[in-house]
Length: 156
Image (cartoon, rainbow, N blue to C red; front, side, top):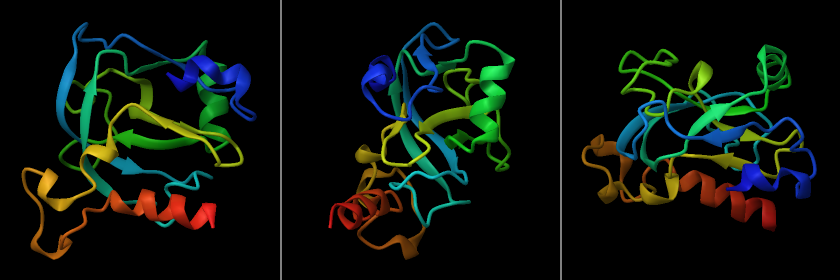
């Protein structure tokens, strides 16, 4: 996991560890997340989007050192994605939040936005056909295709 390599990644000093889910089991299903305001280059132009995403992990719970650590992540705007419930509200409640992370956190980025880590898997649902249901207006590509377009744009 990238969070375990934070000593090698510039700007990742505040990254938390990702540890065993509160459920104490491997979770594999769709969940709903919201893209939050952050410097993440991958998520540019997606702020406020609430989208289904594939979850497939046993160690996805964000573990912060203490309340000050969590406050620093929040105040610096480094939280990139949060789990939300069916009403679009940030949640810590299982099963909408499959790992039990505080404040629904499931993705963190660096201050430069060049490195973003997350536990869900947008790469598994970037095509519309990969979703069990989708609005008709999605066309061939699902909303997660944007992260790949953003990556291409950043690479030139």
